[in-house]
Length: 136
Image 1 (cartoon, rainbow, N blue to C red):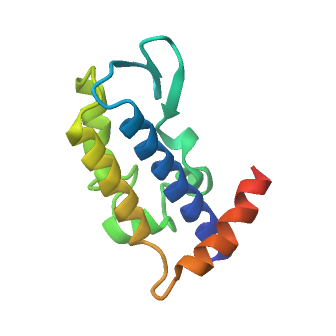
Image 2 (tube, helix red, strand yellow):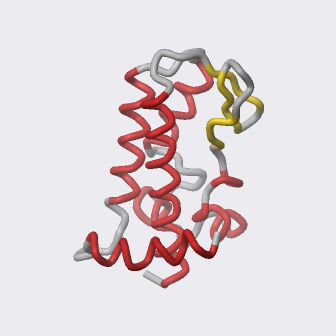
């Protein structure tokens, strides 16, 4: 896997870990959507979904996702046949954060983590993710 792809994958995993955190903090609370952005009842921004919020999409969406580790696994573009499909549906049809939304978000973290190269360690992760956060 090329370094830029690996960094984008790590950033995407981090993004979804943050989403899981937000969902846990807001469990049982109402939310609403403005396009791909989610807000709490008091209009506080919670998180964003969609290609604009995905580091992998920023690299691969213009090429119909070819080369993206998600596409390489599923053979489908737009993250079809992944947990992203399920969470997108849950967030379109729900008004409160609930357990199923959390489970599917955690599934997305796991799914993306499984796209990391074989043998990739937590130490590898930490040595790469810290510089990424500084670049952002």
